[in-house]
Image (tube, rainbow, N blue to C red; front, top):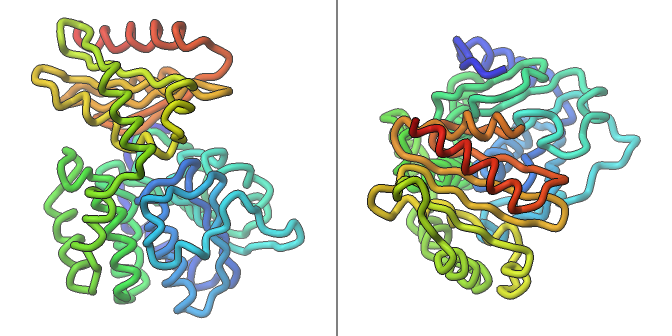
Length: 331
């Protein structure tokens, strides 16, 4: 399904009804979680606990170190599914466009009475009992905030506000991306008024990088080159690059954005060679819709920020196919 949700308000009310009636909640974030999915999961978990609910937060992937300061971070079960005998009446999927994006959780969703799918990506599967999906929202955090404030009628604690602020700030690229709206800034203002430690968090998120991440960024910039008469920036990171820099996938955060800094560049592409697949990240300016390219290769995302993963193909083959598709955007 690729069409925007027509009316989010009644869907959020249905989600609120499920939350009120639920007792035991399973919350999953997407593979290789970011500040938005984790911030939403932690804020939602805190609200649920204040309502007297039991909560289990799950991440299929290791957690990123750069946001380990988030309140409640230590309560996330990374790569640790709940015991098989535990049955949840309600599951909440944060930014998982399909069940598999949350890991191997189909058996948990299948036994839950209600599945709440919260997302803001244009490409998604309507697998939830209720699908709170709004591609016009800058982040999942905006949707979660509406659910908490407008439907559950609850105020935010400082910790919850901090988690949601991180979600909005990271997914908007410090409020730079086109999806940022007046409502996004109003939400951020609400988070600050509720006690979000925004200055400290901004410094930790945007002004602090692990040493391997800095090394990897340098390697990516060193190998950066331009295609399509300077309109496409391309960078490639091989398995050897990761090994040389002592880096992991989580250290690639924001590398693809640097390609757009070169004057005249309209699309930036980062190819990441991994042991079993090739991950491709896209960023673009204006009306260059890279989500169409990502969707054509089994991925998805937004108009100006998208990605896909390809298996059983060599890096050179993937690069040829992807860059051919990017070139077609300019025709």
